Image 1 (cartoon, rainbow, N blue to C red):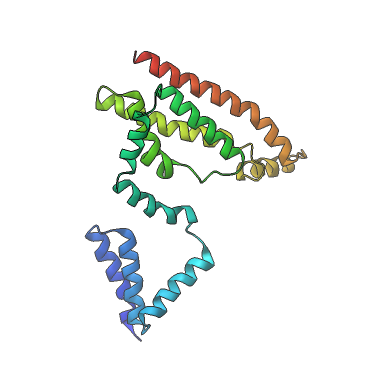
Image 2 (image 1 turned 45 degrees about the horizontal axis):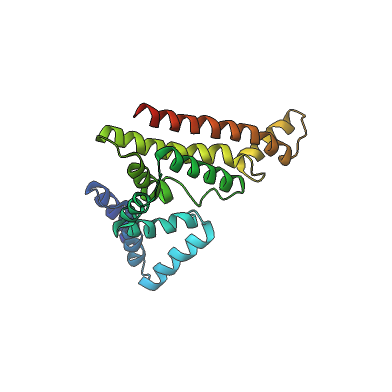
Length: 215
């Protein structure tokens, strides 16, 4: 019995004890196990690719995140700030209300992953909102960032229910069928429109009131 194949466990434990990057630790543990089992590096790499292709646990959007991180490191936030700084009449309510409208419309069309906290809020929306708001201190800057994140959440949450193939619509349809109520997904989507409009109006009012309180 080849007990060296258990070396991957030791690598994983040691990596987490030393607080190394989890992705590097897991990859190192898999590499150590494969080498101990007599596999060559190309075969191990092929096994990684096959496992990813078979299970698809990692969505394509998460593969894009390292690219966004590199862009952010090389000045994406600074570019976003400069863009808003050069706009005449760019205010916090106008900026976030426009983003809210865009987020709701795209979510209603099923494009839920084209924006989000990691994809747009941190690298783009939050820096742009800070420039538009010109916060007086760090506490106020944190509130502006929170409003930017909340705007994204509200737009997605109340916009996606208009899309007939979203999980929440299918869940409601299944529950209603269990209760003997037959409704088409389109009927549920139509009734999500008034809620989305109300959410848009309420959050837009919150943005306007926040700006007014700041003077």
